[in-house]
Image 1: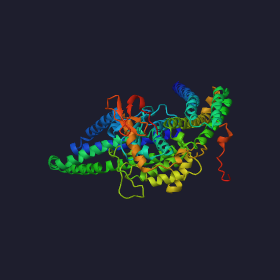
Image 2: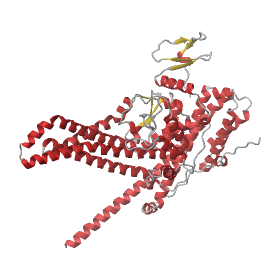
Image 3: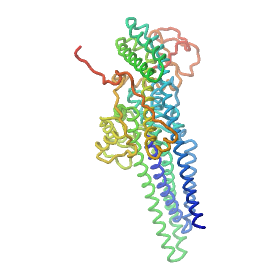
Image 4: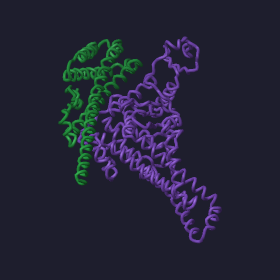
Length: 190
Length: 414
C-alpha cells in the first residue's frame, strides 16, 4: 500500500518535470525563432533606408559632377532595380549590384575636392556610410541568430522537441555580389 | 555570444555570494567585538540593513547619479551624427533590444563609459576629446567595447559588486574608528565579567580587528580581478562585433598616449566603467598589478593586434594566450564553431588629422551640445552664436553682411 503510493508520487513528479521541461524548451525555441525573424526584418529596414538616401546623394552630387552622368545614372538605375526586385534571391542580387554602383561612385567622388568639402554632401556621405555599415551589421547579427537557432535545433535534447513541433533550419544570408567577396586587388601597372 | 552571457551571469552570482558571505561574517565579528558574545546576530542585521539601503539607492538612480557626476549631456542625432550612427550600428550588430541613450562629456581627456542596469535602460557616454581625436573606425571600436559591456551585463555586475564593496569598506571603517576611540571603555566593561570571559572578549576583539582590516582588502582584490577580466572580454566582444580589432587597438593607443590631463570628475568606484583607467599614473607600469581595475593598455593593444586569423572569441583567446602566456580569460562555452573573417579599414580612416584642428573640434562639439547655432557667412567665416543670444539677426564681423540666424544656421556636420 505504502510502496505503491510512493511509486505513484515519484512517477507523477517525474511526469510533471518532463512536461515542464518540454514546455520550457518549446518556449525557448519559439523565442529564438522570433529573434531570427526580427533580425531579418532589421536587414529590410536598413535596405529601405539606403533607397531613401540615394536620391538625396545624387541631387547633391549633380551640380559638381557634370562629366560623370554615366556614374550617377548607374546608381539611380541600380536603385530602381533594387526597389523593384522580388523575392529574397532577387533582392540580394539587386542590392549587391546597387552596392557595387555606389562604391564606384564613391571612388569617382575622390576626384572632386569641391564636392568632398560640401557640408551637405559630407552629411549624406556619413549617413550612407553608416547605412552601409548597418546593412552589414544587421546581416551579421542575423547570421549569428541563425547559427544559434540551427545549433539549438540540431543539439540534444532540444532537437527532439524541434522535431516534434517541426522547427526547420534557417538559411544564412550570403552575399550575392561576386565583387564583394573578392579581396580588392591593387594594380600598380597602370 | 549568448552562452557567454549565461556564464557571466553565473560567475556574477558566485562572486556576489562570496562577497555577501564576507559582508555577513564581517558584520558578525564586528557585532561580537562591539557588543560582546550576544552581539553577533545584531551585527549581521545591521550589515544587511546598510547593504540593502545602499543597493536600493544605486538601483533607483545609480546610472543617473553617475551621468550627472561626470557632467554628461544627452545628445540627439543632429548634434553629432557620426557618434549617433555608430552607436546605432553597434546596437544592430549586438541585437540590443533598444537603442542606448547617447551622452557627450565636456572634457578634453579621451575616454568613454557605459551605464544602465539592463540592455533596455543602457546609456553610452563619450568625452568630447575622444570624438575629436578618433577616426570613424576607432570610435566604432570604442563604442563596440561599451556595447559589449552592456551586452555582457557587466554594468549590473559592477554596480552590485561596487555597492557590496562599498558597504564592506564603510562597516570596517566605522568599526576600526569606533574601536580606536572606545578601546579604554570597552576593556573595562568586559574585565568586570570574570577571568575567563574577559580574556575571550579580548581575543574576540583582536579577531574582529583582523577581520575588519582584511575583509575590505580581500573584497577589493576580488572585485578588481573580475573587473580586469570583464575588460578583456569586452575587448573580445568589440573585435567580434566590428570584425576589426585594429580599430579598438589604435583607439586604445591614442587614449594611452594622450597628453591631456586626467578626466576631471572620476572616483574610484566609477573607474571600472570607463574604457581605459581614468586615473593617470606617473611612469608606465608593465605588470598588471592586483589593485588595478584595468589590464595594462599596451597588453590589450598587443592582444588585439595578434588576432590575425579572425574576430571570433576563439581567435581572441588564442591571441591572449600568445601575448600573456596565461591560460584564457574567455569561458570555453563561448567557443561556438564560428568563422569570422576580419574586414578592411574604411576609406575615411586612412586620412591623417592635424592636432590644432582636433582641438578646435573639441570646442565645436561642446558648443553644439550646449545649443549654439552655427552660421556660415558667404565670406567663408563661421559664426558660433550662443543660445542666449535672442536678436533675430547678427552682423558678420569680417564682411559686415547682416545674417538672419534662423535662415543661415547650418545643420552640424563632421
